[in-house]
Amino acid sequence: MAFITRGTNQKRDNRKGASAVKISLMRRFSMFFVNNFQQALGSLGDLWRTPMASLMTIAVLGLSLTLPTTLYVVVKNAQSVSAEWDNAAEINVFLRKDLRSQEVQTFRERVRLMNEVERVELIDKEAGLAEFREISGFGSALDYLETNPLPDVLVVVPTSEYSSVERARNLLQALEQEREVDSASLDLKWLERLQGIVKVVENSVAALGLLLCTAVILIVGNTIRLAILNRRDEIMIMKLVGATDAYIQRPFLYTGFWYGVVGGIIAWLATTILVIWIDSAIVKFSATYESTLSLQGLSLQDMLVVWAVAIGLGLIGSWIAVRRHVSAIQPR
Image (tube, rainbow, N blue to C red; front, side):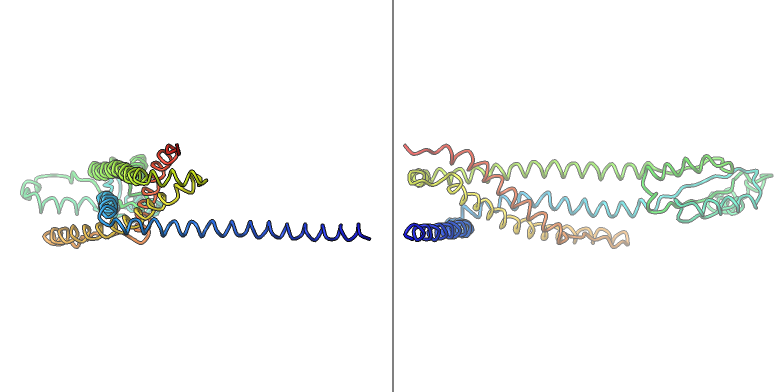
């Protein structure tokens, strides 16, 4: 009987031990988030206690992102404008002179039904000669011509899907293969030059953004390095009492996080001010050409991307600093 009682008591003690382990694991799990929250607030308090030094680092981060962000807005607007100009591409198809009127109309209808074509305009040779007579000033000389030297012309406007340089060129080559066509032309030079300019600006913005982001990482890393060196004695004492490197590094990582949060807001505000300033000049310039060009600013998605990039740069810079310098501090 005593044996049974001891066995029962032992099982009861085992259950209590298991419940104690469960409570301990749950407490450790909750305390992890509590400690992270406390360290995040503590790092924010450290920044608040040194406002000038912190503000200078944050301003460098935010203003460094302002220039590539503003250039991105300009490139985005240039791409939208160039897309509209691409849609205005026209192909001039010169037909053979021996075609009858019925053959010309049949070919025009066949081209109009092509999937790549948005619309087709026919300029017959009589209308072409009359227009040339009016604008050239050779009206009396043209009266001596026995036959009309001009051919019928189809002005083919591609759809928006086929208005790019490559697809417009493919459509041009397809039309030149038709039996009724003598020759065809499409002025692709200005489209190629426009797209080339936009591509150069895009690559320049990407290179400039990469350089400035690298500079931000170095500046944040150097700032965190100085903060670690200023707290060298405190870090040595923490390691003596058993603090891990991860625990010591966490407040400095949160410092980089706060740099990115506030720096992203500064970058957004500065970009908005620059876009408004540039837009006023563009509106005045376009008014002289009786146009209504205007810059479109950052969208909500663009703002979130800029914010995320700023936070990421702050975290990367602080992570590089703490991984190198915190582990190098060892208690004597």
